[in-house]
Image 1: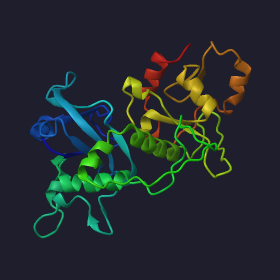
Image 2 (image 1 turned 180 degrees about the vertical axis):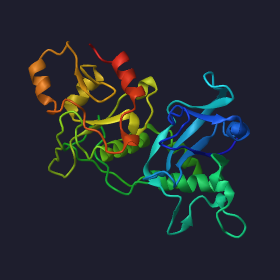
Image 3 (image 1 turned 90 degrees about the vertical axis):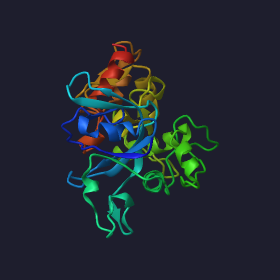
Image 4 (image 1 turned 180 degrees about the horizontal axis):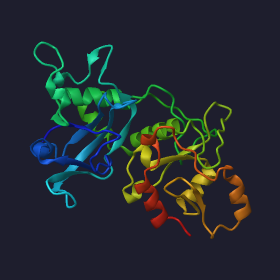
Length: 298
């Protein structure tokens, strides 16, 4: 059992849903099995336009034959472990290649860097995770957090001091909420996707919240594709199934709302949720379908 790197492309031909499963051919079976019960880092190769580099971390729960495709396998991700990085990490930077294990004895990049699945040393793993999750900026206020002065809160940069603490931080709900909030609000430019409003309070903070489409309590992962930026009132309605979204982001309003005129008045003129420019950041139809089927009161 050890750490690993899984290559995933946003335009992948494989049946991947990184927060839930990773499809791969038999040639990588041994390498993937070596990661069962351990953490892996997702990497998007440099050939992908606007590549994210190393972009997320997750824990492999088990490996099974793909029931839908002969000769293929699925690495199932342990619920509650996937986490998008607050800062996608490039393959190389001013200090050189961050994943030192892909270098040969001469210090050059070896063919190992092309492997879709590869093991990674503990030091490389923690170096990448530290770069991906470290957060030196002030975070926007967390949903549900009581503060003494509106959205006022004291925050410190997210830091790792020891390797053991780094791993425990990956499962900390407090840390995960902070990172999820960061990536969702950044993707939506701190603007409510339903109203279209970007409201900034007196302290320069956006009064908008990061909502899970499929809730954490229902094994909803901490990925930007399972998130949407909503104002407080709209977030409340979304969580209670009074509004939802179609796969093409049309805003759906429940017939059970008790003040339909005012609810419709909150919605932006297009009647479609605003979405990030990059398709890889937009709500995934899989999570939207879950919300319609399990939350939305038609």
